[in-house]
Length: 71
Length: 207
Length: 152
Image (cartoon, rainbow over all chains, first blue to last red; front, side, top):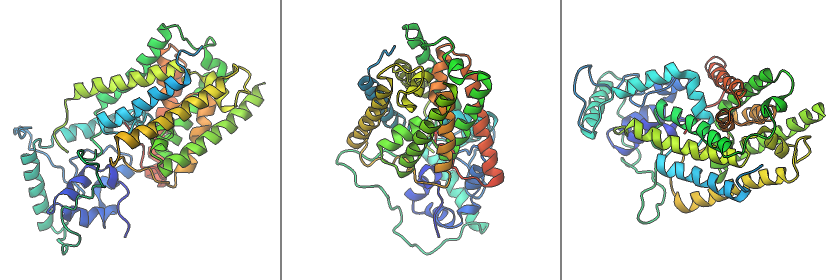
C-alpha cells in the first residue's frame, strides 16, 4: 500500500521515524491507514493543521492553567 | 531603467534562495505565504492550538507516551510485529562533519506577514532610489481598459493555479528547478510556455 | 515539534529575506509588468526596450543556475521537501501562466509593486487571495489535487 503523500512535510512523521516506540504511529497511519489520519483529512479540507494534532484526532496539550515544561 | 545588472540580480536571487533554506530550513516560496492569508482565522486557530503543546523534550515525550498508551488501549493503534529495524534514521549519506538539514517548522503568521512587508519595503526603497516603474500607472497601462478587473482576474488565476501546482515563479522556478525537482521542472516549463503564449495573444490583441 | 524559536526574532529574519527579494525584484525590474511582458513576448511587445527580453531571461537562468550550484555545494544531502509531479502540476501551471501573462506580475512582484506605490496591485493581491481560497474549497468539495504550497 502506498504511503501518505505528506510524509516529507509532516512534523509528526519525523518524530515517529526517530523513535522505536513511536514507530507504531507510522506503521498504523503513515504507512497504512493514512486516509484515516486526522491530519491528512484536515489538509484535504484546506484547514491549517497544528503540529500537535495526532493522527487519531487527539491534541497533545497541557490542561489549561498548568505550567509548560522547561524549554 | 534597470538598477541591477542581470548577473547581480541572478546572484542575489540565488543567495536569497539558498540562504533562506540554510537559515530558516524552509524552501523559499511566495504563493504559499500568500495562501495562508486567505485563511487567517484557520491559521490563527492552528497557532493557538500549537501553543498549547508541551515544550521541552521531557514534557513532550511524556505527553506522547501517554497518548500512545491511550491509543493502544483504545484499539486505535495495533502493535505490529517489528518489521524494519527500529529508529532507522533514513538519513541520506552525509558529508563528513555536518548532519543533513531537515525541514524546519513553518513560520508563525506574524513572520509571514513580516516577509510580505519586507517585499513591499524593498519596492519602496527601489522607488526612492529613483527606479520607479517606467510608465505612469504601468499596471493600468499593461492591463488595458477595465484594468482593475483584469488584474483581479489575473490574480485569481495566479492564486488558484499557484495553489494547484503547489508553488510560484520563486518556489518552482528558482528553488525547485535549482534542485532539479521533477514537479518544479515541469511546472516551470508549462507556466513559462503558457505565459509566453498568452502574452503574445494579448500583445497582438492590443497592437 | 521542538520548542518554537521566539516569534519576533524569526519575523525580523523573514522581513530581511523579504526585503532582499523585494530589492532584487524591484532593482532588476522583474517586478515591472512591462519588463515581464517584454520577456514573455521575446521583445516583441509594443513597450519593450531593446535588450529587455534577453536581460530578463538571463537573470532567471543565472538565478536558477547559481542557486543550483549553491544548493549542491552548501546543502548537499539536505532533506528539502520533494516536489514530485502531481495531477495538479500541469493544469495549475497553465492557470498560473495565464494569470502571470495577464497581469505581468508574479505573486512576489505584486507586493513589490505595492511598495512602489502602485495601488492597483491591491486588485492583483485580492485576486490571489480569492484564488487560493477558491482552490481550498475546490480541493475539499471536488477532491481537486494540490497539497497546497509548502510556503516559506
